[in-house]
Length: 276
Ligand SMILES: NC(=O)c1ccc[n+]([C@@H]2O[C@H](COP(=O)([O-])OP(=O)(O)OC[C@H]3O[C@@H](n4cnc5c(N)ncnc54)[C@H](O)[C@@H]3O)[C@@H](O)[C@H]2O)c1
Image 1 (cartoon, rainbow, N blue to C red):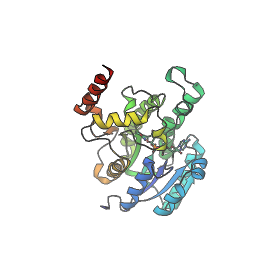
Image 2: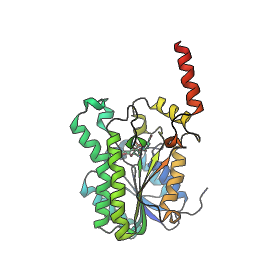
Image 3: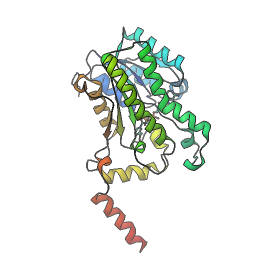
Image 4: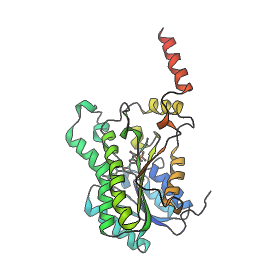
């Protein structure tokens, strides 16, 4: 159900690969809320993923870009402004990838070229996007920029690997750019720290099924789904959240405030009994 939260709002959404992607769900909800937007992803993601289906569904043009390349980002922003008829109200950055994770390199045996790529794709791309948008003056006053992150930026979670470092940098960029963009243009920048979710990127994390089960048992409200993430995202993109900026907001059913729950303790005790 839509509430017209994004009526007359225009935006750019990066990172929809398939119907599991957080960006896909966000785009679908944004469309239901009345937004008009363009979509962007890499050439290979467009070729091998399902973004064209999303584009048809949401009446959105798709602009290919490698988000680590300034020239590509400039093109996405310039073309989006042309298609949408001027400055945009919101930008969603939903981009992440680690070759170390993909190639099963452990954190104490990282390939440093891959590591730099992880940082470039998963964190620096956000800075590049913001810097290009600011230089082109592409976002309207009181606009909203959003990225997706994970609690591994604050706490060590087995298997998250160099993505944890990338997320720490991503959240730092959110604060530091948020100050400048807020001060000069009244544009807000926030990150949503989402529960582990079975997307293509999420599924690559070592032991993800165990992790999802663990966080489900630990969180008083249970894990947040991708659809719930999209619901929250549209609020952050809307005028209802105008004074929230430079924040990392946990959208995780309460997991981030827990240390031990009854459900997790019960499971833990069961394992100990079996061991005895
Ligand atoms: N799935 C989870 O458990 C979870 C939890 C918290 C945060 N996140 C974050 O949400 C974001 C979206 O991931 P997702 O889970 O929807 O998975 P996903 O695999 O559907 O999306 C990742 C996207 O990044 C894109 N991408 C990779 N390299 C790129 C590049 N060079 N240029 C442009 N785009 C590029 C991919 O094509 C893909 O569309 C990521 O930042 C991820 O870390 C995911």
